[in-house]
Length: 284
Image 1 (tube, rainbow, N blue to C red):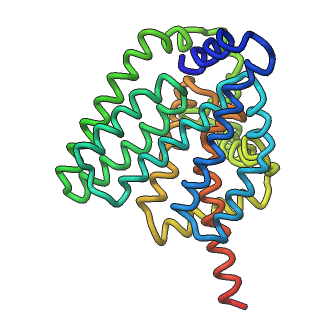
Image 2 (image 1 turned 90 degrees about the vertical axis):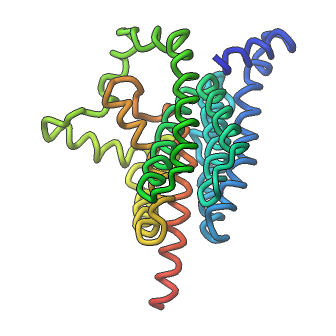
């Protein structure tokens, strides 16, 4: 709804011309370039930052949707804003002020971008489970409050808007081959996971299927598994929620629908490059 209201506001203000209609996705993409800088600076050393930012800056699908009157650039900007906010409390106490800020941001974001549900659901669940495991009752209670606020906002969004999409059988049939097999029941279903894994590096990342990006991504997962499993879980959880939504035939797992996963993917690619460069130098 937020994207549609933005388009309506720009059209009413500047007129319904081609350039005015493209203004919202363009502005969102420019904002994403700023936000990705701060996210990568926070999470990666200089070498990993350079690689990750280069992959982001030259990702052809990301550039293309900066110029199309579609909501995917807004999905990307909203995801980056949420990641910066949620990683803000990765190692910090969740004060009342921070809890309220995170709750409000999440409540607004579900009205701006569909994939906000995957980001909030994945990262929120990781924080809650980690708090329970660490026996941090205060933090667990804070994320219970935050999650409840998000769910209330999402419930209103569903009743007013989303249920009409989920009940549209015609739209769902367009993407039948892009839903994750749940549960997989054949070799063809298992092949879906392999094929889809490599395809996401071609689109939305623009690196080409089976590219070096897939290797660096896996190395990044391996490096974080040994160094910082909480951060790894935070980065992978939105991907997991998106896969689950795909398995429930609620959200296609393909191409432009996954633009919002680009920040998590480039962070892991940057981690993989850092790990590879350090090991090559050490062995040399």
